[in-house]
Amino acid sequence: MKKLFTALMLTSLFLVGCGGEAPEKERFIDANAELACMLLEAGDDLSSVEKNAKDIFRKHGFDVDDETPVNPGCDPNITDLEDENRCMTKMEQIAEKYIQDEDVQAAIIEALEGCPGDIGDIIGDFDAPADPVTE
Image (cartoon, rainbow, N blue to C red; front, side, top):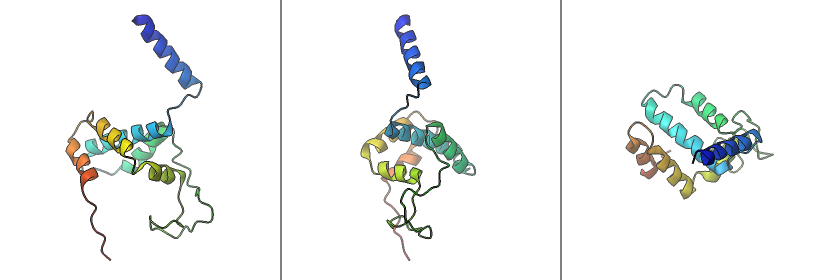
């Protein structure tokens, strides 16, 4: 058993050392689960969430500092998230790719079970209907 454990550790170190990286979807799930746990722990004190969120995603291999639009010809003045002509960063593009993925949502919720705090606060947000927008 000890030899098996040692072999697994050496293999994982080799993969990490050789640039082996988890697939994007898995890294996205891990980063979001970690961020959600941090939010649970923070409670109402959300003062450092943006910086911590960037640090978490950076740790999971995402380039959070690249603000270059991935869609050439976009209009930087458009802020409507539904407008296809708005400028989108690589991180926004990645988030959009997985935001409606039920496997991603389920994996994040499952990961939250290991977090300290009241998981119901966050899971309720997944199930709650969106507030209607009135103009």
